[in-house]
Amino acid sequence: MLARVEETLRSSGAEAPAVEARWIVQAAAKRDRAELLLDPDISSEDERVADQLAARRAAGEPLQYVTETAGFRHLQIAVGPGVFIPRPETELVAERAMALLPHGGRLVDVGTGSGVIALAVADERPDAEVFATESSASALAWAERNRTALGASVKLFQCDLLSGLPPALAASFDVVVANPPYIDRAEANNLPREVVEHEPDRALFAGERGLDVSIRLADMAIAWMKPTGWLVLEIGRDQGQRVRTLLGAAGYEQVSVARDLAGNDRIAVGQKP
Picture 1: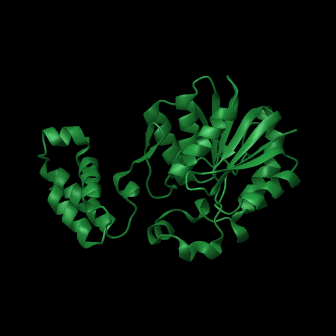
Picture 2: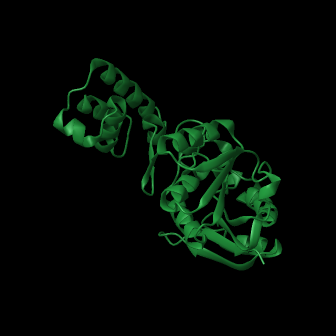
Picture 3: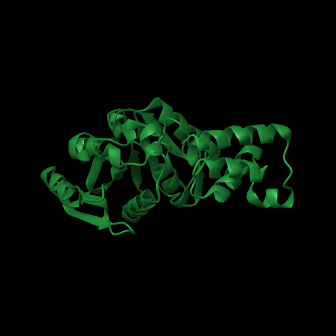
């Protein structure tokens, strides 16, 4: 079975057919690598599912959608059509948010998607009170699924940015964190085909220069933060100076931009006075 799936992927031009074949067979059989090494035989029904998953991957669907799983920090997160696939860079954003979150503090993850930042904080900082918002019903369904699977204490709200949070939470958050869409629509042709064709546009693109959502959130977040609270944003690789300017104009202090492991602008932070 494994060889057949690998050949399907290789014939489609997959860069790592052997690795992807193993993940697909594991997903089809609902068994981990160790279990399959001990007993590589799978049922005929599992073989049928593996062939279907391999065909989806060969047609260009993201591997994470095909297997319905993506790793994020210490967690395995369920993902699929309708939700953005978490990237390694966002793990650094979650790390920065946790570093700024005081013990027993309150954090909200805006536009949570599959829930990765909120769930990572809840997992690694059980002292914290964690909220998350998401405007897309399909994405929120994945976040709810992950919250249930992980038994996480995260309060989820369907709304645009922070607009649907209870008014009693105003001026109460120590950290507002987000991985907003930040790609200029003009850059769509530079993205991998599987990203443009499968991942939701609303999670990728944010108007001219990619800053529309970041500007709206920066303006809105101050009212929801405690004095000296922090806004933490994931940004595009060349947006550092522009985001410094927009955070300063929105009234934030202590504005800074940190780079990711590849040396690109990636995390912008600003403090409410």
